[in-house]
Length: 201
Image 1 (tube, rainbow, N blue to C red):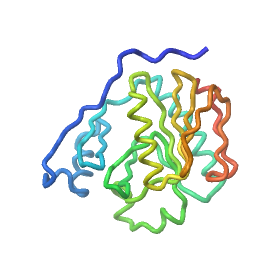
Image 2: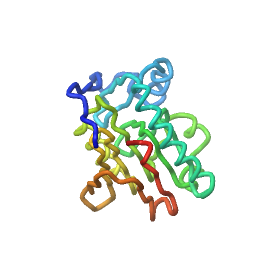
Image 3: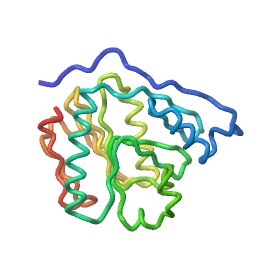
Image 4: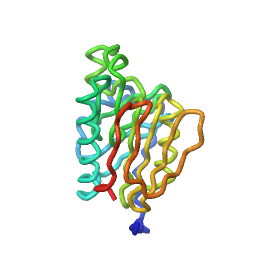
């Protein structure tokens, strides 16, 4: 039986800055995030800042399981590079986003300079996962998934464990709703990768 999501949704703090503000420039924004590691900070395409508190321990434990499964497949497959929830990416539209898990083809990753890799890599991941916590706004996460797809992501999974639903996103297709799946197949973007959700629900 699915669990009910909390009626209390915790929206991120939204900060508006003048467009010429120094903190919005890529090099300074990275340093700003490093100086405020207790928060998850993202930048929208409109250059607003979203300040989010860390997730609860239960959600993070589930996310750790997801990242572990993706890591194990990535090591076996060898065609790409995996990332956890603390890494940021500068999307083509200017937003800086931090998916809960991500994967990038090795050729795209290796095309970046060393300096680009050290900061918020200027690319959109080929594959992303967002795991909804109890207090996350579902519409905000759905908009975020649409943004990933619009900027080049080839496959995205939004996992809502409170309703036991997965929303699958792919280019040029409407989002697909999958109820209570036990396994998710990553083909063809992640050939041979299967995510076991039995411990996530």
